[in-house]
Length: 552
Image: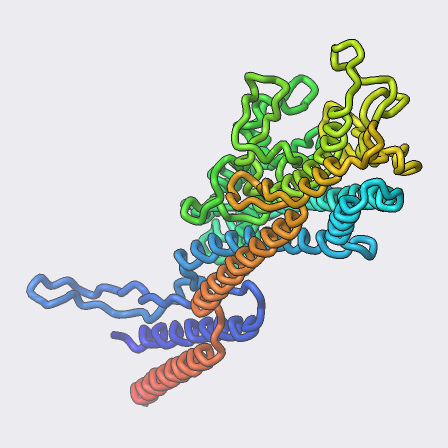
């Protein structure tokens, strides 16, 4: 080995140690930078110069040329990244669900200084007082007044539930826009990284950190899978469909329902458009981003993503009591309700809306039915046909029909919360009810029936609840169900947060910068730099000695 070759070895040591120290310094500067991935140097042996090849020798005679600084690589764990992103998405799903439950609990609290619960209890008390003395005009007036307060408070609660649905709908738009933006940013980073690394000289590690941070953010929105192609591009599938590929990012569109205004995310590349550029509805089902018909389950990995959670919580229409049914004959009967309970049970908002609307339906329709039954018992059948008389007990002189405490804005829409109003005629003159039979006696039967309407335990919250309750206790049962669901949901969310934090800590141990470890590396590379320097000095002294000796 020549002395000049020794200088190459020493110089390579100096250069490699200096570059290693620069990497350590870069890590130390970014010790608190969020999303930064620790960088690690990779050293390799330089090519050997072969002097001779002798078959009888143990090995060829070669001269080493030192060490080479191969690359700076990021220290990441693929499996930890994959697990973190999946559990982060699951955490996002349950966080949105918890927010929905808490918002519903807030809605069911104070409304204009008085809770809905008070209005229901006041109506129940008014019915009991009416039962004690049905002919008392004061009791009749209080009963009609409490009916008006009841429907007014009920509509306030239902309107707030509808407004929250609209808020969730806006959230769907915001999160869809954010997903599209993240997709374009990741695709742009793919291109920038490829341009820098195409010469195989530099590694765009800082841009890679930005890309990984964008992917982490995207993983909270929906279920994704990430692969890397041969050129280093991130290939991302979102809900099983190619979202980001090399040089391309698919866009998610939003279809707005003309009736509800609710948005449905769909893949623009999979949808069919008409001549005006509008989506053809028949192609929407196959183009939808999320398959909401699947059961929400951790085992099936269908509980991932904030956007999906917002869609599930919002539902797809304004729920009413008609949604609380087990079966339907739609579409064989075009007039039947096309929705069944299984379609809304996963939507916390729609489920509560339907159960609440059922309470309003059963109370208002029940009161009207009891009044109608009382009038029907005393019909005068002059002609034997059983027709209603022009005038009579509980009969409205203008309509020749029994009085209705509650009117319907659209009779075909049934007793839904938004379709009901108090009868203003009875508000002005509650004594028109009278509760005095044609024979002049008090109609205690009608008053008893009204009381039994509230006290009989014949009502279910939904088809999956088997314990029956009374109308007087229905609302308390509904609140208990919401509280129980909230408790369970908060427990799941809390456990999921612990899982995500544990995975984040485990991943941080791999990608994060440890100041102690970096200081240890700094000492190692500094000593290596000093050793290379001393090696060069020794070779230099030897050369100087040889030259001086030969010169003399």
